[in-house]
Image (cartoon, rainbow, N blue to C red):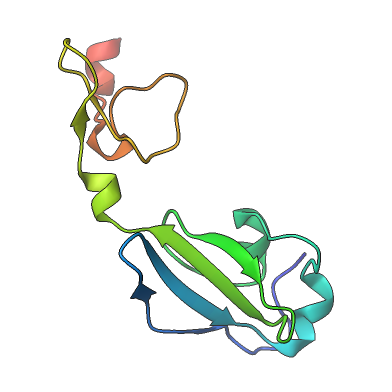
Length: 119
């Protein structure tokens, strides 16, 4: 898939939520319908290739068959990524809603690396 050559930019809805997820829909050019899968949701690299630009954690979660050029996105509410919990008695922090990353015990946003101290 490649970015639209029709020149029409995606249109983004206002964000709305249900207490668990934040939602938005994105309207892309109807010229792109043939490049949008009709039987599955797109991965992030696929929808970004259509020219859609959004922050982290958004997922294409549903297909709106009557209007396939309207893409439905959601992400967990931000508070679910910023409320760390104590994982065990060693006081390591973990984020219960973030995807696991090779047994990582610290939310990704709290990581900091001092490269000079590792050499």
